[in-house]
Length: 207
Image (tube, rainbow, N blue to C red; front, side, top):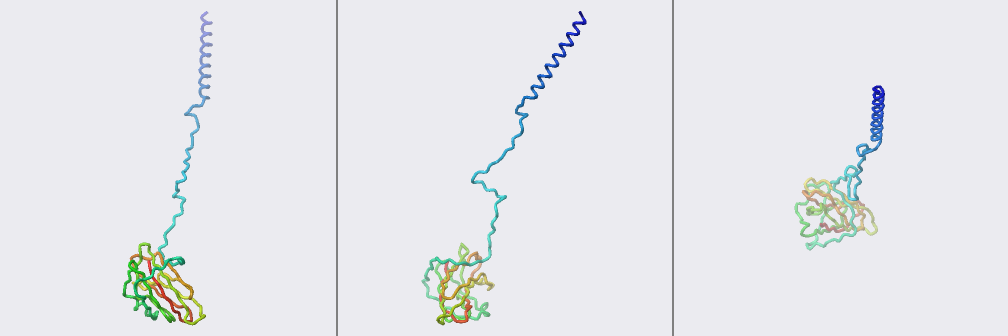
């Protein structure tokens, strides 16, 4: 009888252990939140998002430049037209203008005649807040039928260095804008005749 009880006890213990093993195995095979694979977060930018790492940075070019502005309205000066006389370009440095013309108050108008080489404005001009100066130039050949080119040159007053050059055709009105000018400096202009024939003309400098 004791022997039978021992056998029963061993069998009961084995059954209990088997049940526990099956229960644990079943529990292990059931997925839960901790067993689920980790989710990878993905940020989707809105339409207003700007990726600065992939945006091309545009650098501002500080070099003085000049271009056409064909539809600009040229303001008439209320001051008398300045008569510009031809000067030797080699002596330009010593003949740079000494008088200041404030374009904020009035545009500057000048005329020239029978220019074979060079003529310069007899005033120098300030730069406005937009770092620009406009100039309108009309030219005609003295000799009927003559054709050729000329240049509008902006000079920095202190150094006499060329800031920028506009190339025009004699007989065609030029409306030019010189921009990226230095607001701490002043400028004057020269008309350089590249023809083998003299030219007449007029100009207006304004903001």
